[in-house]
Image (cartoon, rainbow, N blue to C red; front, side, top):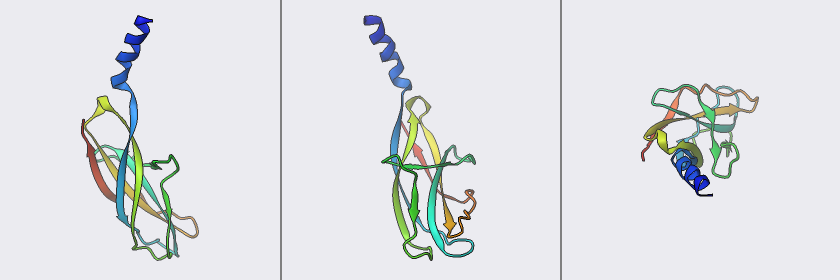
Length: 119
């Protein structure tokens, strides 16, 4: 039993957890047609390009419906970033895309924000 305790104790520093991050942004306009929703993505690194659709703190996808279909509204959403303490400090990039009523989504390369998590 004592050995099991020490094994578990050694694993603690490598355990991952999710850190909340509030993203404040202005809705982008849809490329064509009316704006249906926005999607929030994140990736690790100061110049990363492998964006992942973010999850909100309740573990659902970070997608927000447009209020009026025009874009330009101020929005805020809390997302969860999975982190591993051993990897800190780490920088994440946030991108917001628009999805029009036909389901077409804009490119994720326009970074909305960059945030660094520190130990």
